[in-house]
Each structure stands twice: as C-alpha cells, then as structure tokens.
Length: 433
Ligand code: GAL
Image (cartoon, rainbow, N blue to C red; front, side):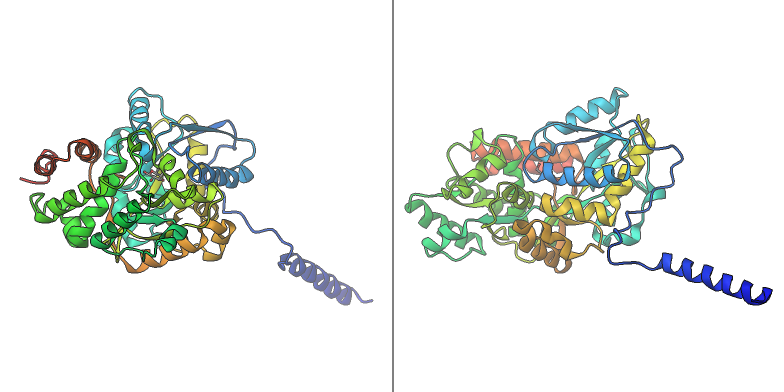
C-alpha cells in the first residue's frame, strides 16, 4: 500500500469511528439538564425550606430532590419543612430566620407580591442571570417580576378554584355537577336530606375559609371585577362582595361540624370515606388524593367560576448569604428545568410553570393525569386571575388580614361587619382611598 493510500484509509477509519460514537442508540440514557456554570465542586449540605408535608406535596418535592441528587450525589439534602397548609406557620419561621441571619439555602415562596414580605433587596439575591423568561408564560412572568428583577424560580402552576366531588355519591343521589351557586346549594340540600355531609371542609389552619371565599368573589364579580378588588378599581363596598359573603355564610351551613378541628387534608378523608360529597380546595388536593391511592374523584370549577382560573405558582428563592450558595444555584436550575418540573408536578397535582413540558410525562401518576390534562387546557384558555391567599394578588400583610377577617366571619356570620372590615384592609394596604 502506498503511503498516500495508507493515510487515506487511516483518515476514513478515524472518521467513521467518530461518527459511530456520535450516533444515538435507543438504549442511550436521556441527557440530564446541563450543569449550571458555578465554579465550586458539588458538595456539602443543601437545606431546602418549605411547608410541603402533606401527601402529594411531600412526594412531589421528593421527586425533585431525586432529580437533583442524581446530578449531585455528593450533596446531602436537608429537607427543612414546617407543617401547616399555605405556609401558615412556615412563613413566620422563615422571616425570623432571614432577619436573624440564619437563612436556608433556598426556600419556597409564591410567585407574586408575597415576595415583598422577605424584603428582597435586603434578604434575597436576584436570579435574573439564570432565569430564562422565554420558557415561562406571560401571565406568570407578570407575577414574578418584582422591582425590576426576577427573585424566584417557579416550579408549577396551581389552581385555587376547584370543586372536588365524589362522583359515586352524586350519581347515587341523581345530582348533576353544579355550575352555579344556586345549583350548588340545591345539591347540598338534597345531600343533607340523604344523611351525607354535603361539603367537606377544614378550617383549623385559618386560611381555608379565605381560600374558598376568594373563589366566591371571582364567582360573583367575574374575572375583571375580582382583579379590580386588588388593584383598587373595584370598591369593596360592591354588591358582589356582599353576595359572596352571603354565599359563604350559606355554605357554612352545609359543612362538617368538626371543621374547626380539621386541616384541609383531614377534611378530605370524608370524601374518600364516601361520607362527604364536595370539597372546595386548590389542586394540590389531586396530589393528595393520589397519595392516598384514591383516583375516583371528580372536579369542576368552583360554582360560578367556569372560564376563570384563579392561579398561583410555587417558586424557590435564593437568600443573601445562603450557606451553600453554589448548591442553592444548582437547586434553582433543577427547579426551573423541564426534567425537574416533569418529575415534581404529576405527584404535586400542579401543571408545569414551563410551557414545554410533555403531557405524556404526567402519566406517571395515573390518578392525577386526567385532571392535570384538563387543568393545562383551562390554563391555556381561561381568564387568569391571581390568588390572594396563595401570595399572588396582594402583599403579605393584606393577605394575612384578609384571612383573619374571613376566619372571624366563619364564626360571626356578620356580613356587613365583614364587608366593612374588608374595605378597611384595602385602605390600610394603600391600594384604596
Ligand atoms: C399552597 C401552596 C401549595 C400547597 C398548599 C397547601 O399555598 O402553593 O403548593 O402546598 O398551599 O399546603
């Protein structure tokens, strides 16, 4: 063989070897998300702070931990949870830790005005550099931008205004799924006469009543009217607010008598046990039902809110002086990744914050699959309005006072008193005159 021919053969062989090694085979593992550009080698502990202790939420978080741990096995995750739905207890503990110079590496916070509670310019770091607005929907970006920066990485989108029901009990009593408040209360009347608990509710943590009530406000005021309450364009003296309070009072006549002793998930047990028919709760309830192995639930918008999606989003923040900042950044990258969100959301009962998740990935939790498929469709077509109880619509002090007024209303039933207190809160918040 001549020298030239030999060289030619050698080049050909090398090229074909390179090409073969580039070709994907069906067995090839899925490429994990790219590692973030942080200098430090992975290691140490990573403390993640949240209130996700109930079924579904705990599982979802764990799924995301698994994605992170597969990438950074050297790091020990500290799962720092403070129980109490909607962060009732966790938010205060967190604020104390931040003010005391003892931040976790990353913590849960809702997208929206809730971030104001943690004084971002003092206690948080903007995450603009690692944040890719192109992968998130516009409605969510509006919520996330605060004082010109992105401070938190969103992991999901939840819906607040959902009416869960036990289909077997509805059918056995010949009741169609109610779409209006009148139909809802008519159904409750029939169910009560049949010896059932019409509505399962827990009010133990002090936010659940306000959660239901925000949906009632959306029902009586419509999407624009509801939005206007939080921007000062619609006065709290509006008759729609009166009507929502009256509906709420009527509803309390149909709930389980032990509501004050139960949390939202504790009350949900009545549905699973075929003792109660309806429950108004956010769609983390779907994740919770699934964690109980109960997939036979039905759902509809809170009566009167068809076409309205009262939305919220869970996100994670990067505190100033996070003890292990390099890992906190890597955690946020996982939170924002397609892989992280596809692992987290099917168990959590929420849809992805990202717009590019594969619906098929959600089949992994069969109990939530049909619901989440419909939630994704509604999110794409409904009017989106922000939840107040879950941090999106108002600053935290207003949201907290709002919860307190409704908690008081649960026992007082004083419609004019509650309405004038609600009107005062808007003034205190600096939004109404
Ligand atoms: C919400 C939160 C959800 C769920 C729920 C009940 O505030 O956004 O993710 O955890 O509380 O705890």
